[in-house]
Image 1: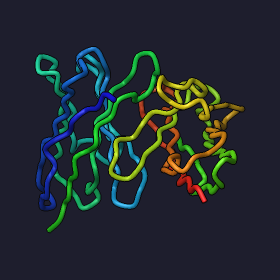
Image 2: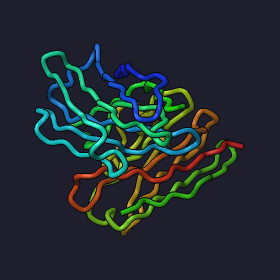
Image 3: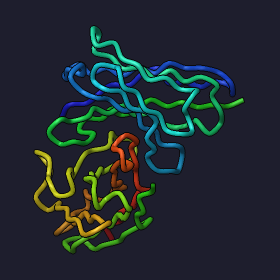
Image 4: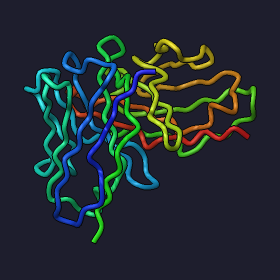
Length: 119
Length: 107
């Protein structure tokens, strides 16, 4: 089954920054909108950000707006999430997901990368 | 805008499980369903309210009525034990919404 691969997670102090990456060895991402979704410990899935196939349109969930930036490099078939001014509440597994044109849903996901914000 | 799911549903093997999701936007926008097991990538199991993606078993079905959607698993198997999330969008189709998730326990 096709999957995406996230990387860049780690342990960071409050106020710190991280850059997450999402690549797809078997999937061409440049034709698709992309999402970042996170799951805090013991909680459900939470949408973080979206980017259109060409990178022109970007949308953010309220808790991360102004601190996180989603971007993409279609020449490298990679999507990024820049996390700045991190807080304890940003601790979560971060998943990237691809928008399926036929399904109108997130049809391919990765296993996630873990971000831990701790002092 | 919110999507509301029951926190948990329990069912015996071979029986039928129904997981509901309610929200005002569901009367106008499609809902999708994801299955999520610990340590694994989420899997799309139902899209556009009632369309089953390729590779998803026929025992999974979806329906919509007014501002609610339902994921039905007929003949539940042990492997179906997981968290299930409904997902839609706000009224502009811009912001993604997830329900709180329903933990399906197979007794």
